[in-house]
Length: 115
Image 1 (cartoon, rainbow, N blue to C red):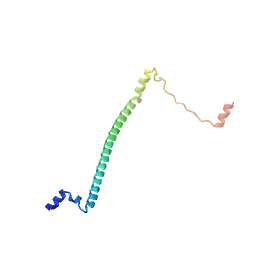
Image 2: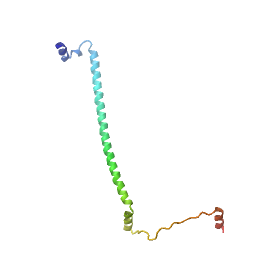
Image 3: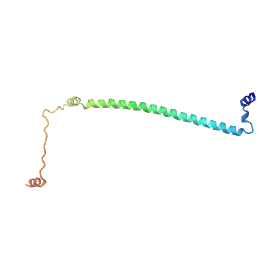
Image 4: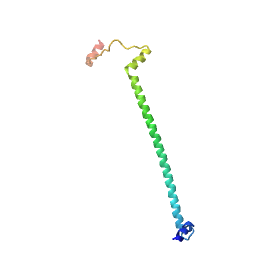
């Protein structure tokens, strides 16, 4: 047991005859570690991007609500009439009249035009 630990600490497994197998395994482990680090980095970048886009969406939604309430206020009849009074355009005192159009036969209509 003591010799096994001692040889491991001296890294004799890297210089023996079958050290090529050990080196391949070590290189494989290093490549896996590099891939894991790269994947973690990409994941964290995506998380930051998602957080940024979420905040931007919240800002845009609140701006939309503000603009919509402002538009509702501007569309109110009292607000429109105030703006028109500033431009000296006053509301009509005469109520609107509904116009009714009766359809006539085309032949009779054309005859009346020629007479």
